[in-house]
Image (cartoon, rainbow, N blue to C red):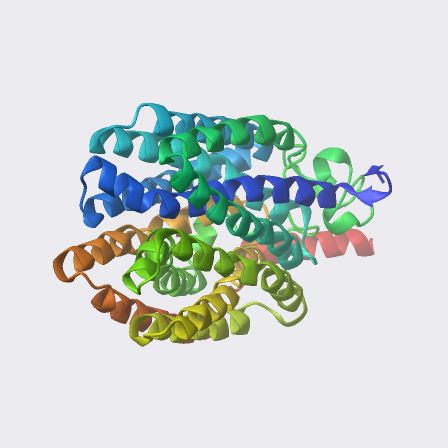
Amino acid sequence: MLRMRGMYYGWWLAAAGMGLGFLGALNNYGFGVFFLPITRELGLSRAQTSLVFSAARLEGGIEAPLAGWLTDKLGPRTMLLVGNTLTGIGFILLGTVVHSFWALFFVWVFVTSVGFQTGFFTGIMAAMNSWFMRHRAKAISVVSSSNRIGGFVWTPLLGYLVVSQNWHTAAVICGIVVLVVGTPLSLVFRRSPESMGLRPDGASPATGGPAARSGRPAGAPASPDGSQDFTVGEALRTPTFWILAGAQFCRMLSFSAISVHLIPMLVWKGQSQLGAAFIASLYPLVGIPMTLVFGFLGDRYGTKQLLAATTLLSALSLSLLAFGSSLYYLYLFVFLYGIAESAGSLNLAMTGHLFGRRSFATVRGILNAITVLGPFAAPIYAGWVFDQSESYLWALVPFFVFKALAGPLYLLVPRPRPTQRMLQASTALRERGES
């Protein structure tokens, strides 16, 4: 078996993915830090600034099926290199040419967001799903934890740079870091374990096995016996896909709004800009160990019940933010919300467990496209509510309701039945093995 220093190459990819996930936190958490300074400097309402973030989410959802299809066809390394370059250039443009609403809109939506969706998210997670099966949830969670490590580091650091320098300087620094660090990390990635003569999780080499005899293109990832690899069309025809889409829609609806408005919400609760950035940085800090814990639990006990329970916990935390009035409640909210949302990476593992490896990126892309309308509307709605009332209360109440609905929906997600094609393929492989 081909190894690097005795370790399965998939774990080296996971290490590189952690580095890229750390950089990707600049996109996930950076806009929240820039939110108030940009709003004030450009003379925007909070709804207008939220519209930029929401349009980026909508663009990402529309782009996701194409990005997923390209990732499945070209492999993750190509997409990571393209995405990393676009993201870095986007941050540099943000800090140098953005002096109006429309410049902000174009740069963040059509450069930075395109790069992030193309590379950091789709490429990394497709690679983890391809290189791991038995350890899929662990691998995805290990990589996802790095995004929270990045959030813990970058949020207060960017907050300090914004206060001591300005948000333009902070954005340019982000772009340079992404380009200098992200490019070599992207080069580590390979299409699949089969493309290197390996098997998922570091099992015996694929030479001569079922995957090698199936007639697929060289290196195309699939389950060892082909029995759990749904095509895109087969996945879309299952009730499983649509119930899962409904659960993810309800869970993710408020996530983007909290991401972009967390620091403004903490300021609404009486904190200073720098104090709010510090409290907000504790959210990803809590999620670092819990993401790893949920990864191990997901591989051992399954993902459905964990996602249901943590979604309800997230709903409870939002009620504390909405109605709590003291600093104690803010810290308790961040603690519980950090625990609950650290299970979010299990959505990716659950999709892989249900539909297999071969079309994972495309299936995930279509799921993102279907569920994106909630994350698109929620930040704008939250900004509009504050503009009208100078309060986030009536934004948080419906967010709580949707979170509470997501829990039962996860419990209703069934395992998809194998198609006739899969049953025939499995029978043929078994008969060849017996002969």
